[in-house]
Length: 405
Image (cartoon, rainbow, N blue to C red; front, side, top):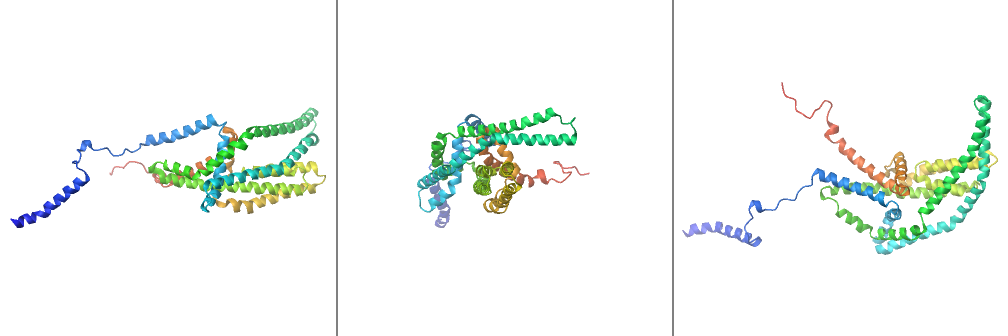
């Protein structure tokens, strides 16, 4: 009997231990099935779609309602994004993030002021030369149009090109030049009205400083808001967008500065009177693929034909743009951009013009980031499609099982 009781002790001890464990964990018995909490609900497909649509609608409404005041904030975000890598390197070297941000913003303001103090008088003087020569350019254009019409009249006959048409073309040639100049002046005036003194001197630098100082915390906060189920995929796509966008923005900025200096110095050395302003404009417009080079080359060649008495000066101006194009294609672009930028030139041009048509200069600033994001998402979904049954189903395959005969 003792042996039986002893033999029964392990079982009793096991029960006691189990009971003790239960007591230590919870003094209450397990709840009945109907009282247990439900598992965490899963988001439905309709909820996910509603979230995406809601974010898109809120973003679009925000642009529509606040487009007139968003420009300094978008510009400040671009400055903070551009200066984040050097600020991070300074912070790793032991400089506090706030001090590093302040140092970079002050350095940027000093560079802009130095540029304005050094080049503004020269640019203003060249604008004065351009305005003084507009009547002469209009007369030369009118004479050229009359000569072309006279040549056509000799080749095609007076019944095809009459005297009235010659006078009309000659008068309209000067009017077209006047229209271009007036449109340019309106654009410049509108640009200065847009970039008012308050925005440039106060709002944009201040906002850029706070964004640059708090950039890591903002990124961490946004990362904490990502839905847990898709956090890994969203982080991967965000890293891809950042890789492409940073390569394009920083590389294109360096390319524009290098080309502006090259064209301005080159055209000034060959003796073109308006070479400084034309070269700077051509270089700064190079962020639109081909537009800066083509615009600068056409304008410079036209001005050279009006200024130089022989073809030698015209050929020298053309040589500057040929060398600039080679410099861009074989030195600047591979060095600063290379194969990291997966934005096709046509896609960039369309995005810039579409953004400008939709939201003006604000749309131009947002065009490339949005284009880069759309490109990354499109490639992601294309890869998903190419491994899906929608693409891999063989010809003649159907979604139902054929009955055997």
